Image (cartoon, rainbow, N blue to C red):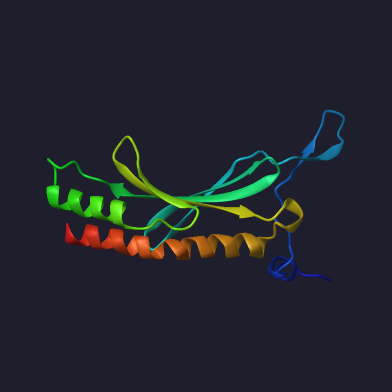
Length: 150
């Protein structure tokens, strides 16, 4: 008998994005996934937001992280200067961007293409997510320096 844990740990186990649905007649069918699919997790005290989307047949994974509020010069000129230096002088990760939103929040995000549905496996998803997060680690260190100096 195959144990569930053996199946879950198998590298080629696909992620089930389609839900089962029962119609009015009692027939069971597979419902197509409704994109975008969102998730979130915390790493190094940072709250990441994830989004899996499919556009024109291509699946993408986007991770976003709100790094904090960028103060106005009148609030904290020194901290504003440090934020400005990081935003202007730091190369953003490949396929990523660092932007300031209308509410003065600094947001770091990165997007990568995922394999097609037939190749979209749990290990591939976790690997892609982990690689993206690790590629953002240097930026988290810079932000931590700003926040610690405040």
